[in-house]
Length: 430
Image (cartoon, rainbow, N blue to C red; front, side, top):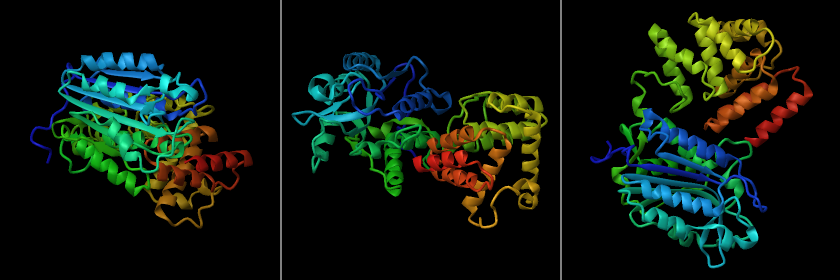
């Protein structure tokens, strides 16, 4: 059960400040997923189903200069009266005096003490905010030419981010490899954070406290062999919920919202079920199928389900919008046939799999990946677009499932050599 005083932020009196630096002008390595971090968190905090604050209360800043970053963040901090959430993602550096420095777009590795944002300035902006409850989230590694050997200094660095009266959540991987994976939509830590905020926590009650989120992240990241997050000075966490718990809402009715909120695939199951049970809810599914914010694989399934419900026109429109060329009605017929074969458990007896190596596949996860690979092939999407859809799946937290689909794609007997190498390269990046 949630603590007695657990509450969501007042949207009129709260602010979320999301800052990320992905690109650097003076030689620091780029961190492409930081752009996804800021965008993904902004979508979450603005989502009305999750307790969203709206456009005016959620501010984003990508690739700012040092001066712009602190000036703008300080101004937004002063606007918060109820809840303030400040997030930073990018390189973390260590200055000559051992201070934690946050790299901005104009940070010079040779002059980090003068061109990076000192954590002391960010602490001051947060601490002097009139907000009743403050949350600071840092997702940065210690890399670049100004880094000193950490040794046992991690605790000292974490102590620098402690802000009196503020709940601080910090990711402190030691290098870029631990911070993000090539081709991923989010950095490792923020990807896990977005996943838990979207998907919720079973048995955690209707609201997710920051402390519950931390404990869940700690278990998940340790279990996956990832650098565990740190929490500092958590005495204000008990009365603040970051979002509503979507895992607690699985049995609630679908409203008219159309975006891929929560876990998009679990939410899709709910949309499909409701559309099948209530004809008036088909409008929700039709609208979602046109929404490009949904993952490609989810929209493909929407097209198949809409066709099954007699909404063939919308199904064809969805497939065309996804970039499927040629005989789109034939593609839809192929998808329809595939669905019938799966439902009747006749897939392995059909001519559809004559070009696939299925004889040695017995593991359920590999079978699922192979089925998805056959289905994707039947859509007529080029292999690169199929890979993009699978990579998107991995970016949403389904890395193992994505790898199983790519492995299934490699079981196509007459897959051209160039496409085979492209799939193999994609597997290496996951």
